[in-house]
Image (tube, rainbow, N blue to C red; front, side, top):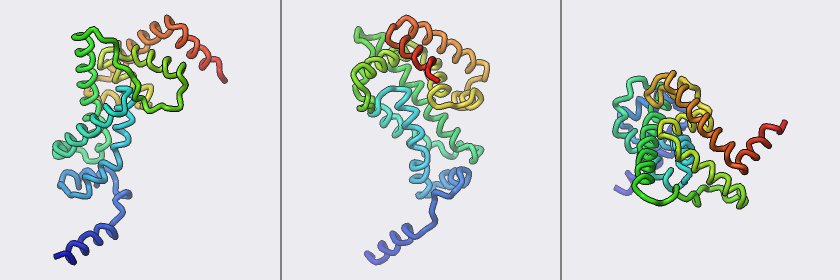
Length: 210
């Protein structure tokens, strides 16, 4: 029996390099519940979801939880994917849904308590000096004031560099709604930043650099 297991493991090691498989073929294998597809889907897309979650929530530990939740749902719901070549967008959709839900829960918790916005001690930016960390915390506090939808649109557009059309598909809203939400978020953030001497000075400095 031990010999048979060893041969099985060896066949996995010397098998096809799954990194060369297209997203469409990977999706079809995932739908067929092939074991290798689960691992390859995680390897290929987990960093993307983690980066989005970390930027949206400002917490690496919370981002880890979101990633676990997103991929658990992706694996369960893979058979709902009608266009295998759209696997990336399919996963983005689950990530956006999970993050919007978390942002709603966070806003509700803030309404039900007298505490300030959550601390951002776990930003994973150990190279920042104290002043920069303070500026980042203040900017995050402005993001916390936005509605979950406005915050997600702003994050996807400005931090993930997604197009308006991609955001609309991922969030399940119209292009016009994305544009309105982006304008609203940008206007509010600009107003709050201009009222903050430190952030306003930093923004002015960045705009003046060649």
